[in-house]
Image (spheres, one colour):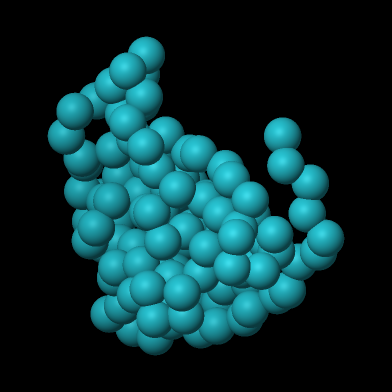
Length: 140
């Protein structure tokens, strides 16, 4: 466990056509973000790409969807994002966000920058996946 001194907030808006995962990865790289969390997300999608639990490939959901939740961790070592959405009938689906989730009209995001720590992704032999590794941020 690592305690931290505080959190700075970053607010942004992604416009129509933006690929959410790709744009968040660009933000992390551009601003050299060592650790952050998605605190809030409100918007709609024209295309949804999710990997459902215990599946090896993603599923594409066509048509307009509203984002109900978007959560995850961001760092220079990678991002890990989960999202739930509702279609025009209110049917909900959720899973691991992959590339291809395209903003329909707008997406409003609030991201918390976590001070004093660094989020990285390292291979975990137990899970077979890159998992979160939290360390003290030496640059602060």
